[in-house]
Image 1 (tube, rainbow, N blue to C red):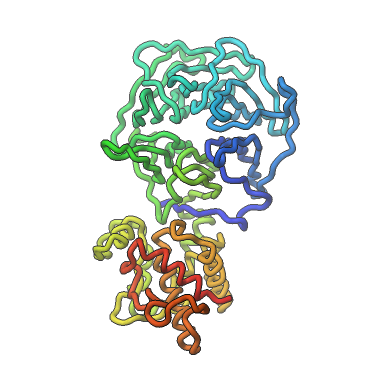
Image 2 (cartoon, rainbow, N blue to C red):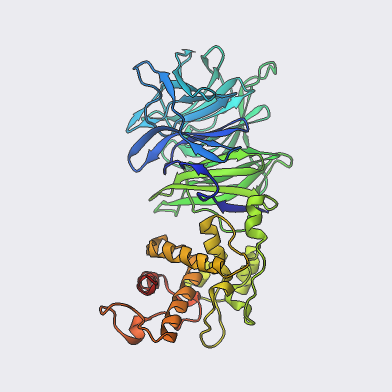
Length: 504
């Protein structure tokens, strides 16, 4: 079992990288992760942001260098490739505005110095959305991309010692041209998955390229692989990270519908098991990050580090860990002491790692309830009459505050519950209806009811404003038994009323 844990400022020191998508992130040994470039809104980036793994510190190094035009480092760009060889990060291509780039750079991460490289041989054409991987810590193989006019299916190999490019002559059948795919060296083969192809269709095929290893005397050739198991749906803009005995695929962008072809963004985790040679779903014990594509995901030992991405509307700047259940990061959530609940335990059913078990228990037929089944959302009290639950008895309320704070708050004493209430009051005060996940509606509704009940007990008004109608219209949702009675169209009004009753 693995768990997703959203990182917070308490997990890291320094300055976190700004929102972006289309960037690259590479690991340098076991010491650091280097993030370069990307796109936020319509601004292309050229900054270098580094995560020091040992010291848990983000920083921006002061890079030196001298390019052909006198610049220190590469120009701003996104959708480029970046591959590490020892302590060096090689960068090729990408896009700036509508221009595809074909320049070639290397960053020495020991001294933080950029060098623009003059390479030789069969130089690849400018492109973006290509994919590349390292071969035996000396060479780089790059496949496909988009040159602004056509999808590409060429294969180039770079010797990082001689700086000579060679277009690999491949015999036999070849994959359809594509961009936005992944390319990952696995043993002696380059595995290519997915991408967007000629004419625009999004692909879900898997190919293996042989003939890349010196001394093997293999004729370069492609083989399409059709593996058993739960294969990923067709997608582009996903990531594949190599960890242990499997490859982990996360996220990406696809299309749905037969005629409309509406966009779909994914947040599923699918592994390619190297031992059994089949696709599997990675068991996840909690809610995953929001769906996205064009993010970065790096394997750091048994952990995976996810950063950034784009979901068709927004660019992300969040950082997530995906960790096994025995990891200390996971333990701060999975080992929280049990909270004493009232006799009616329907209020906050303890999280069950099996989504099917939750589906069996939740029988409500409303649209919100159906979505709750899919998202593992627990429901509130369902007994006749309204029961107001204090913060320290509201497990979901406490867990949500804990996630936002990035650390467990289940401690002895009343202060932790006061702190949790303050965190969530500040959080929901700044929230918009569209930003509130459905899984938060239960804790939000119960806190709304708590605040109103306390004002009633103190003889105070429901709202400190004359613009709100008194009586029932002023506390529309106070008498609801649980969040399953809410409709999607109720969420803006619930949040509006909640903000008006928040304590100063």
